[in-house]
Image (cartoon, rainbow, N blue to C red):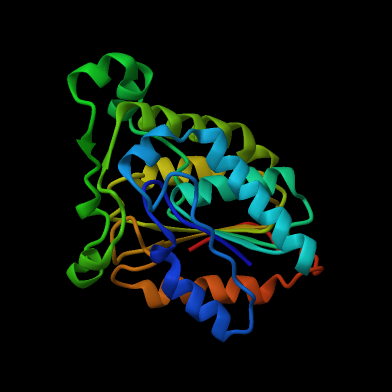
Length: 246
């Protein structure tokens, strides 16, 4: 099982999910993406293609040992999971938690003109404090909390890749999204979910927590939904159930 964390974060945001999956008997891999969890200078120097290639390499290494494996992705990790699924029709299941599938208009402007913005503000706060509403979990977060205009541009490149990949996904896909998500508004999430090409897909809305649903209020339900989805789609099993939303 491959777990992919989000932009500017670390696998720490997936530790509750990982513990639950291991408890259910799954072998779990949660790689640290390039530039993440190190220094701001390291983060600033990384590019979208490095994050995508790291996810590919991690998945290839996992499947070489264990065969076709599911992917669980949070935020940008969900975006990377979509790219992998579009390239890997043998993936048994995909679970996306608040996937970063759209970029707000203001962020698009900063990304597009990032060389100019670098002169004005080389670093700016990411607003991550609104992504985790539980103060105890927020205090434990290891994310940088800041980014650069160039990094926002690189994130926009991941999103553009996702836009191409969404209709090509044929893997059974679960999407879990919060109604209070300040990163990806519910209307944007629903719009991109509709473009997902999987014949079997399900969108579940949750009312607790912010963007990082894996550590926030209501995470028990989120983790339960992921476990249920994976149990319904074991490796090698085919399913013909229709799309659904709830």
